[in-house]
Structure formats: C-alpha cells, structure tokens
Image 1 (spheres, helix red, strand yellow):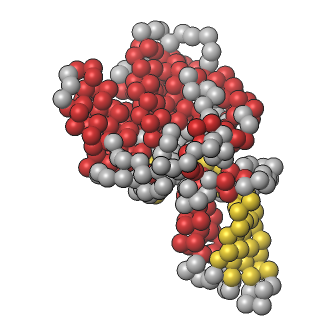
Image 2 (spheres, rainbow, N blue to C red):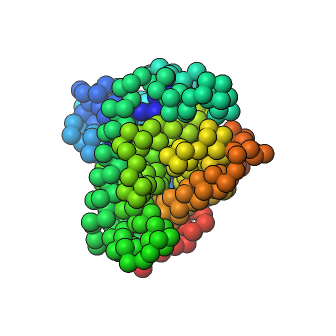
Image 3 (tube, rainbow, N blue to C red):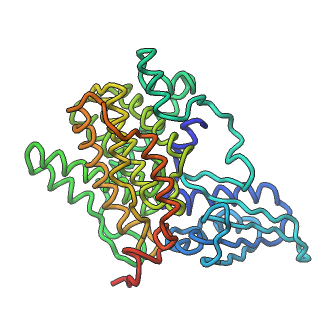
Length: 401
C-alpha cells in the first residue's frame, strides 16, 4: 500500500474524482505539451454524466486555457473498460497535427491511474494490506494501529497529519460561519450555522448529536462551494472524519497528538479499502465514499476512547457494513443532495459504532476484511445508474425548483 498521504489530499472541492483528479491530469498533460496550439479533452462515462455539476470542465479549462484553446467533448454513454471515470487528452500543433494522446482515469480520492500501469510512482510503504494481519501484529507486539503507520511512514508523517488536521479544523470553522445558498441550480440553503446555534440550546445527548451534525454539514458545505478541504477518503465524504474528531477534541479535550494518532489509524483503514476495493463512487457507489469515511471515523473514535485493537477493528467493520449497497445518485450532478446529509448521518453512526464496540470485547463473526470484499463485489453488481451517473435513484427525473 502507498502512503496515507495519497489518501489524505488537501485541495478544493466539490469532487475528488470529478474535480481534483481531472485538474491534476490537466496539469500533467500541459507540462508535457508546452508547445501545443490547441487541446481537446473527451470525458467518458460517469465523468461525463455528472461532470458539469461537479465542475469537471471548469477544473480542466482553468489549467489548459492558460496555454491554448480547449475543446471539451462529453461522452456519458461510453464507459471505458478500466474505470467509469475515463478521459482522453489530445494536444495539437498550430497545423492541427496530433502531438500526444493520453487516456487516464480518475479512480477516486483525487488519484489518477493508467490502464496497465501503477496508479502513482510513489513507493509502497506498507507490507501488510489486510486489517486481520495488522490486528494480529498489534496483538503480538502490544502496539497500536497508529504505531504500525508510524513504523511504515516514518516520523515526518506527524508534520503532514498536522497540516491535514489544521485544514480540517479550518473547514469546520469556516462552514459554521457561512450562511446563504450553495452554488448551483438546487438553491440549497446552508444549514451548518443554524444547526450549530440550535444544538447549543439543547442539553447533553441532543446537544452532542446536533453539534456533530453541524460540524459535518459545515465541512460538506465548504466542499460543495469549492472550498479547501481534505479528502477523507474523498471530497464527497470529507465531512465525516473531521466532524467526529473536531467534536471529540472540543467536548473531551483530547490532545492534538491523540487526534493526529487517530487520524493515522483512520488513514490506515481508508488505505486498506482503497487498496483492496475502491473509494470511488463512480466505481462502487456511495458505500465506497461515505461508507468508508464512516469506517475511518469509527476506528478513530474507538481509539480515542481507549478501544483495544480488536474493538477498533470491530468499530471500523460496523461503520462500513451498515453502509453496504448505498447508491451514488447526486441530484443534478452536484455534491449536495443527498451527499451533504449523508455526511452528517455517517458522523453520528461512527460515534454509535464506537459505543457499540466498546460494549464488547471485540469478538465478532464478520471481519472488516470480509466486509471490504463484499463492498467491492456489491459495487461491481450495482447498475451504472446508481454509480455517480446522476441517472438513477434520487437523481432520476429530478428538476430543480
């Protein structure tokens, strides 16, 4: 497995696969074709179907038009075999001669891949890529999951996670302060600020749950408006982990170092799913985005509350298991409905998974690794209507008011 730095990417929303990935691909292609007089980009499958709502064209044009005119072609009915988020870049001379043609895929979390090639040039850092193997290592050595991350990544991981946490906190606090309507034809009003104020008026459990909702809404609304967030594991699911960790740090006064260790464990969980299955809604549905985010946050919360390695594994398993089969059906191709509310619910579910696992000794029948396998199979079985094409489920036949 690669570094968790490949999982936690700092950038601008609203979509890691539809915005961050294509923007990165455009930067790479422009770097190789500085002499080009014109560009043509063809977007395929899911990338084309909801690309306008996700501002895919804006992300690409922002890079390539600095150099030369750009033509963008949309092919939502053509799915390339390697991945639903395919795109082909072409560069031309002033005389119309093709200089280079490059087909690349945005496979989730802002990561790019080419068919038959490694997704990145960065080295593999993790020898073990199954949670059951890492759990056995923890029990044998007496160490924790975050210590395995430290062993594989090196001590400089704390500097990176510190920047990640600062970005997450900033997104929460910005989102709580913003008001008004989110961009796009849905005219969806921001809710984080209102939820935060209302939650403060309740006591104990209701206040706690309302604040978690508010924090998740805050980050998701920042993302939906193109703000700066951290993929955890994606832009569309970026509100879950920061909501849980922000809430626990504010309410329980966990130290910064404990939060960073929890982020390391959460990153390990997300990395395992990314390696063995998918974190792409276009490939496996929203279970691969919000479901994985819930799993990451569940593990982080369990660790913060002193869960054993077995209890942390159980919390992570529940966080993912109870999102199995969740479809990706963004209305109007926007990362707003149902995405924003799903982040809030998943953050609450993560806290519940921690509580549930804390009542056990960590022993259970279905392992986290098994659920990851089932999630991958379920994602492959889902019709393309329910995988970020904006054609099925809640998105079907929906017209903005």
